Amino acid sequence: MTTQKLTSGNKIVVASHNEGKVREIRDLLRPFGLETVSAAELNLPEPEETETTFSGNAKLKALAAATVANLPALSDDSGLAVDALNGDPGIYAARWAELPRIEKETYGQRRDFDMAMWYVNDRLGDTDNRRARFICALCLAWPNGEAQVYEGTVEGEMVWPPRGNKGFGYDPMFQQIGETRTFAEIEPAAKHAVSHRADAFAKFLADQFPS
Image (cartoon, rainbow, N blue to C red; front, side, top):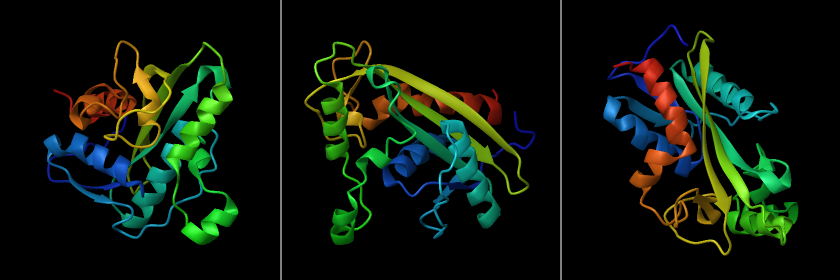
């Protein structure tokens, strides 16, 4: 666990350029009185994710933001692991949504998750095994190089066709075990309570804000 602790009123960098992730993390941090600013708002560069695990990439991003901003930074590296695809797309979940080079030249660097979801379903084919999980690694890093990673998961299955418009990424095709709705069909507050990010956050909060 980290020796340094956050307190109400601290300013913290949410080390992400993904608006959906930033919004979700801000919602989870709001009750603790932390002032948040995103990496995009600070015009921080996006470091190349060269690690091979969620935890490694989360640590890389948090340390990069904390060092440049001279503030504590919280990063998130998360993705979708599908059993029948041997854990793919895994840490490359966002990259599966990247446009082909020729389309990037026309439309820029945006990501197309409709395309990514279609690709996941196409790869699954007719298999009966559609079990999957979202995985999240949160890392809290400080300007002095201290860092701690907290990992969380949520179990579910892939459904087709995608349903709902309240989530982002692969949410429209992910249905948590025991649920009848996808992550994109439930209200954000309900998702925050059960998601992989919520699981990781519970561990983060138990460390940083012990009762």
